[in-house]
Image (tube, rainbow, N blue to C red; front, top):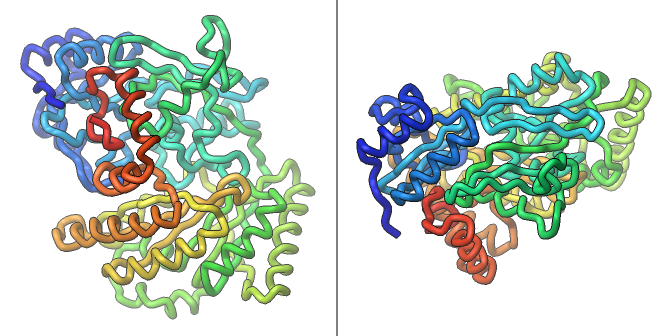
Amino acid sequence: MSYNRVTPEVIEELKSIVGAEHVSDKPAVLAAYLSRSIMGIEAVKPDVVVRPKYVEEVRKVLMLANEYRIPVTPMAGGLSGGFALPLIKPAGILLDLSRMNRILKVDPDARYMVVEPGVRNGPLWAYFRKNYPEYAPPIPDGAPPAATVVGDALERGFTIVTNKAGPAADLVLGLEVVLPTGEVVRTGSWALPGAQPFYKWGLGPDFTGIFLGAQGTMGVVTKLAVKIFPHSEHKDILAFGFENPQDMIKATMMVLKQEVGVMVQGGNWWLVPTRLAEENPKLADYQYWAKLGVPLWFMNFELWGRDEEDLEYQRRVVRREMEKAAQAGIKVREWKLHPRQKKSRLKKPNKIAIPYAKWRGAFLFITWYTPWMEAGDFAEICVKKMEEYGFPPVFWVASIEHGREAICMPIVCYDPTSPDEIERLREFNRDTTEMFIERGWINYRPDPYVHAPLMYSRATAYYSMLKKLKKVFDPNGIMHPGRLCLP
């Protein structure tokens, strides 16, 4: 499919829509948006950045782009690295939605909020602590304060209540979406004029899921209605150490079946040193960390109680199940965390993901979903393959909805200035993707170079229907071309 470049005449039209100060084609500005790592290492600089404030501005920009067949890439926080950027030339318009940053509604009775795509974790959490301290918004855990709730929801990500309530997509009650044709569509009960977004399933077949995981290929989400949850002041974290991932997964499942804990996540000891600047070789030696009490593999259980009595009950449940695991032959020990460690892990928004760039200069999350009881196999394969390709075998895993599934993630720390390391990273990704798809595991956010082609080459019926839906919502194919192997 062919696309047109952004001409000076188009830039003038864009300025007339959003204001001259919110349109830029300056090389320095375009380069500032270009980034590698986190979720993808391939990207192209846009031809122009446009920063709308209102839905009507988004609508006019999309109609203009549709008329001239100019590609459009929408982004909110832009913290998905290369995945928030264009893939093709001409790169077209990068639609930066960060100015759309209003918290439009909080309904503490129906327990949902309505936010725009530019609402970031830090300000949102502060707003709730000040105005609705008894409730918590489902911000993504581990993501920086500048990440957005809308971005996490659209990517079906991991929140502070994922072990209790499921992935972020399960919390969505409705969307407002601007299509490239200029149509504005609402989903769920919101689709009925005058109705509130209290009921996800709406007026008939549910449209919401078409835009979740679509990576901006179907339209631009301008509002999100999403559940909020009771927030407790009675919290604790218990941690347990294991000698291997299989034992960790089996013992943790015993706890998960008791349905306690809002977040359950862990991994291997490499999660500790790779958050530090690489200055001393001893940091890469496990014996150094073993003397400090760090287990080879560990699992954290974040507990929120209604009161201290309920919190103590949850502690007893976790310890009881771990004792049962020990009696069944699993080598497990409680890892007594320092109060400062607990305080750091309980802090929201948690910045735990940011420091991984310190180890080699950059990091890539390659995230997959598996059945919980297969996460041990996934971990063993990842560790072996990361060592084989010359990367520190950093591995993280978390429970979704009390162990109904697992979100598994090798964190590849690499030198972004080394062509050799980047090529080895690509080969690692391709090699493991072939193995994981063979096992029936699902990539969290399929990249257009490895995951999507390999996945859709097998899921041919699904891919055929996806292309038909793309044609319905985006007939000229201007929305984020190349993502999900879509033209």
